[in-house]
Amino acid sequence: MHIIEAMRIALQSLWANKLRSVLTLLGVVIGVSSVIAVVTFVNGINGYVAEKVFNLGADVFIASKQKNVITNFEDYMAGQKRKNLELSDYEAVRDQCMECKVIGASLASLSGIVKFAQESSSNTQVRGWTPSMGRIYDLDVVNGRSITDADERSATQVVVIGHDILENLVGATDPIGKEIRVDGDSYTIVGVGKKEGKTLGQSRDNWVMMPITTYLRKYGAHNNSLRIWGKGFDTGAPLINAMDQVRVILRTRRHDAPGAADSFEIETNESFISLWSSISQNFFFVTIAIASISLVVGGIVIMNIMLVSVTERTREIGIRKALGAKRRDVLNQFLIESGTMAMVGGVIGILAGIFIAKSVTLLIGMPSAIAMWAVVAALAVATSVGLFFGVYPARKAAMLDPIVALRSEL
Image (cartoon, rainbow, N blue to C red; front, side, top):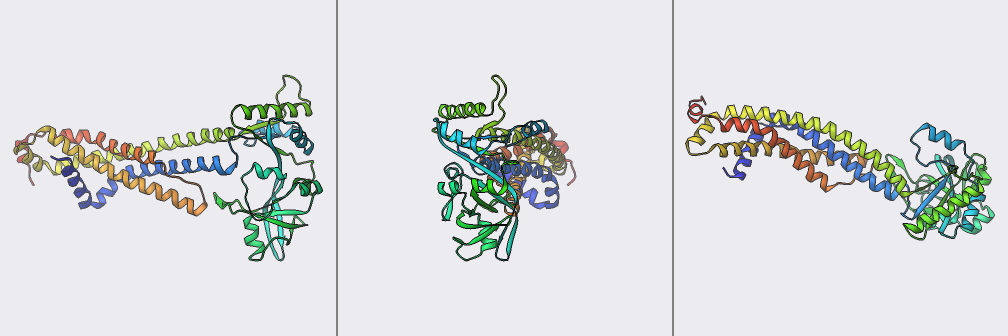
């Protein structure tokens, strides 16, 4: 029998027994859709982490009091015992690091209260930045200007606002030059940041940014440790040289003993990506294990249905053999039908997985990106499951005696 003809018979059988087909393919659909959804999320978040969350290029590093991503309590406690990085540390690095293309510093609070006229916003991120941060961090000012060196030297009461503050508080009026209150103090709006949208349901536009000196004057330096951002002249050796020079400067200022560990952390974009890749890989492997169980169950159900099909079509098999069909022909026919059933389940699972992933993206903003290799692999695995579990029913059909098959009741 021709392959196309066998596939057509399989599809006709699926369509003729819709409920049975749904129940038959359910395991394959669940397994494939789970894998596709997870891979789509992981692929999307990988790109998001690399491009958006840390907003770092490959030539950027961060020096901080403790790790930016803490995975255990011991690391947290060790970091808390260290001295803060202060504005004077930033200034020393800025003036002494000859291998650095640009140096910046930042501070942030996540619980600011912002008011404009009768409107207010809570849990707003209040950022204290040096003007040089604009050359390091991916932030575009679409209206007005950013903070300047003059603002930093004078600790000017000016802010750049995020798009949420513009939309929810200021409204349609031109915000430039307007007065706004941040945690009780008045500031003049000098710029508006580009809209960045949401991630995991959390807005990335609910922030205000002021000169770092203004921030320190307002909130004090005691409980605020700076993050010092550096940018090398290039990746590779130039970046390593810049990091080494910053390490020497900070160790000297913080009186770290020779041979002792650094009393601070220096991390690059690669550090963050590696950590996330490790987490996402473990998550992916767990999902694969769970999906494999669904695929095995789906394969067993397909085998059972194919055995039922062999019993129902015993007389048909006898007629085919009587007309000259060989065992190989009957075997191939049932294998193709089994593989086609699983392939249909794989296609449905792929579409369901993509639909689930994109629906979650629309609802809560979780990044997602379709990986074509995963689509092809899922389809191939689903078809392979059908072929593997179809071998026994197909062999049973091929071994039927044509005389016995012809005697079978319709």
